[in-house]
Length: 98
Image (cartoon, rainbow, N blue to C red; front, side, top):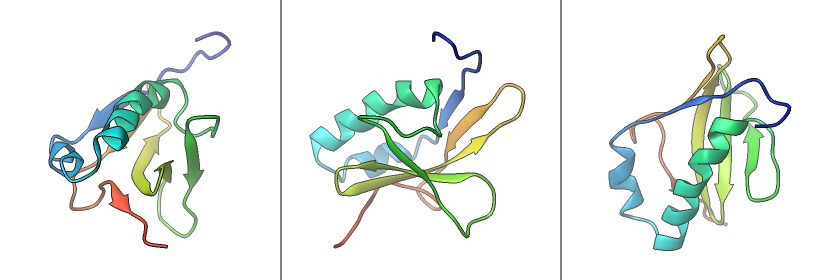
């Protein structure tokens, strides 16, 4: 991590695994690869990591776009920083119907 002193801890609820069984394998692979990107900077969008803050929601709620799927997550900007991907009741990979 050149030029970035902050490293984020990523917390993924174990029930996300159930949600991942319902999506195509290439989406699961991209989600797993994105976990490293969460540690570097979960807020800044960049090639291969399409993140966006959600307006109108309490706290620091973001979404990560993976194809037609969205991963919702919150960011804790405390001293140690953290990215929380909660359980499927409040957050899961969801297909966006267009």
